[in-house]
Length: 298
Image (cartoon, rainbow, N blue to C red; front, side, top):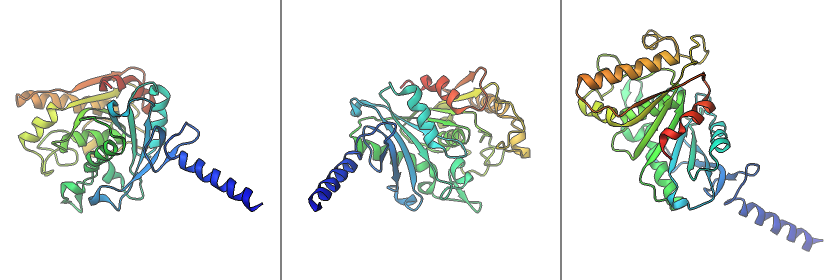
């Protein structure tokens, strides 16, 4: 009897060990990157080591070294698992490493997520403490763990995730970002040096021309669902500053893009952005992902 129990325990242990590296949709990998999908809790970025981030990942079969990497930023409920599931549902045939990042609300308040933790009690924090700064560290971590050879990464964010993305593009310079999609953001940091941060650049510490040059030369895709027009959405911010951008997300996105384009023209700066209008779609992250992912050229 003891021998049988020992054999069963040995087989059970082997099964658990083997699941560390390989998975399918019903058996996710936990705490180790590998082919398949799963979750890794990341604490490897020293300045934010006490604020863990859950990486929901999907790595398809194939030559992992050559696969491009995309970061996916979810909305305010931080449902990275749903965003990853949507990616797998529609793009599982693409040889792309998909990383849906969950910034847990227990460690990251709404402002620390969507505004990047740039300020605390109205005082500017060092850039290494920004939530945005963990992206580059995770990129290095994934490359090291998988022996991936990518030199650039892409980003897709919807709703609150789009707020993260467009401010990442605005304030993080000297990154390895290639292209980024900000889809259906609730409100924006407009590149206007006369409007107070976080609605504009005034008193942000980034109101100079190099900031604008960097921002406008970035490959930012502003994606808008033309039916995202509900001014009474319970998650939509209504302040005088936000409402000055419009009363609903579609209007605010149009305002952000037009104001940015005009500012670039006034300053004779290169403008590399694209605006993508998704017809018939409201505040639907899956539909926006499906209709815009090709713009990342993955």
